Image (cartoon, rainbow, N blue to C red; front, side, top):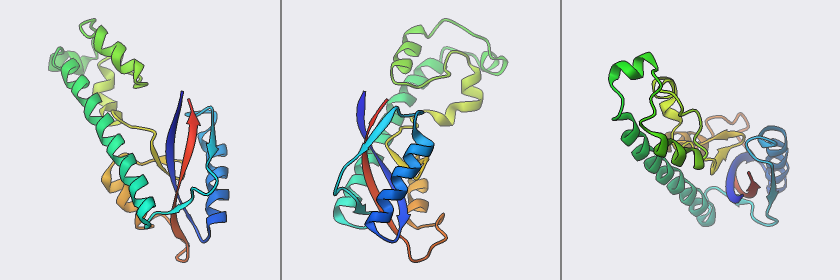
Length: 167
């Protein structure tokens, strides 16, 4: 399955941004979570440009929408368990239909209540927007990325590159 993700990188030039993004993608994001990816020639945008801001905002909307959809499913599922069942990690078959729907969305690890206890924060972790090889999963993550909090090179700019990926 193909879809478009975006990667934010710090670099001084467009050429350096492309080179860095390709290296990060090939070393850290293939073969997992993506089989491969194709970069778009000429689609290297400054994050502060109108087009760059639009690309980033569109990706964040997708991330939030997916999170909310998955959260609804989890809330529906979790109401079928008692607090004790969740704590004790009891496996119940009350939620087979919801589990199947979440599995289709590539949300894994939902076959036991253990998941609720330790990994609930992973719901909706979309693979739409990355700061280099780390997924951006919240508005705070994005603010830190755009502020260059993780960049040691004060001369570097913030770039965003779309990538056509296959999963």
